[in-house]
Length: 183
Image (cartoon, rainbow, N blue to C red; front, top):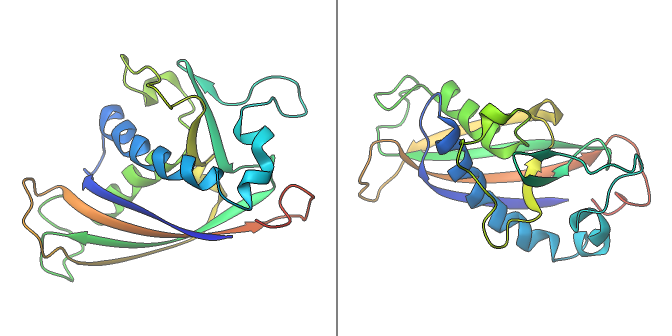
């Protein structure tokens, strides 16, 4: 399955739990829409939060019930192709607003289920429409290919950390099952 995620906002290097969760919320809205469309609409039991075969809910952290698309339960891996538009000259990998690898680390942390309480802001609670809370990755170890291309963002920004991200996602099954045959 192939789809594209979009983000416009702050992407700091070594992002705080607050920054990562704000980015995570942006992707949640897009992924919630994706789960309503085919072929994911046929997997509503997973999206609605029915427990996996183990009988216990998966990925409950700090009151959030996270539902990742790329997960071991669906036997899926992901390849990410990222276009990062930033308000700086192209070709400067180490930049005044933070080096690329630390900004990508912030992004990857935002795309995955937070595994510990400290990965979420202490006051964070699910808002309307955030149960379940959709995210792309169960764990960033499920990313098998990652490419990043940077270019100049040609619109005015209020903060040098502001970026536009276009993320092309391709999912690949590790084994074919009835649940992932179209994914």
